[in-house]
Length: 200
Image 1 (cartoon, rainbow, N blue to C red):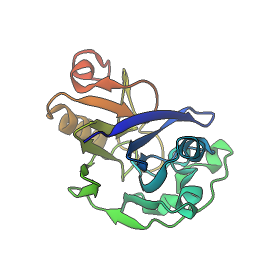
Image 2 (cartoon, rainbow, N blue to C red):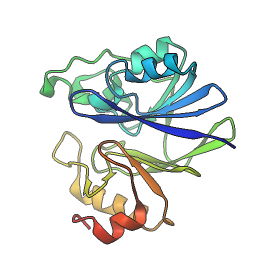
Image 3 (cartoon, rainbow, N blue to C red):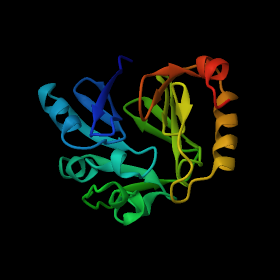
Image 4 (tube, rainbow, N blue to C red):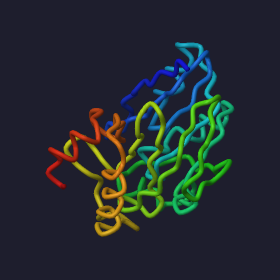
């Protein structure tokens, strides 16, 4: 199985969007902002079939409507689904207008979403938002804004919770070591964060 992960920096906040591709087919984890994902797909002749969201904040969903029009199915946690089409995505607070979109499907945690043999297992990790999730794959963990290299997600936004985030980090750190692909910043590993993350 020759899946490759490409990290794209998008928008003025520098949110990461990940394109996971194999044989001209691609899944996206977090759409990011602007045209970065679509431009990458066009340049590399990729058909984006799936877009999985770690949470519903504006800087991670900004390109969802355009990706959906291009044929991608959008999936998000049931607890963050409303953020895709309401002001709860926080765009207004940052002066960013986000085109509303309705998800094609929602997940509740525990599902294994199959993308041509690569499984994205949904792990509920609330704290940064009520519906934050991580995706566990054989390639690594897509952690969204739950865990960063050297940091963790903010909990002072609407429906954030420091107590929930702490519990979510305990879930992650109980897993075997793996690469971590966060929603902002550089990639890292679980082992590195357990040993060096100042939040821990």
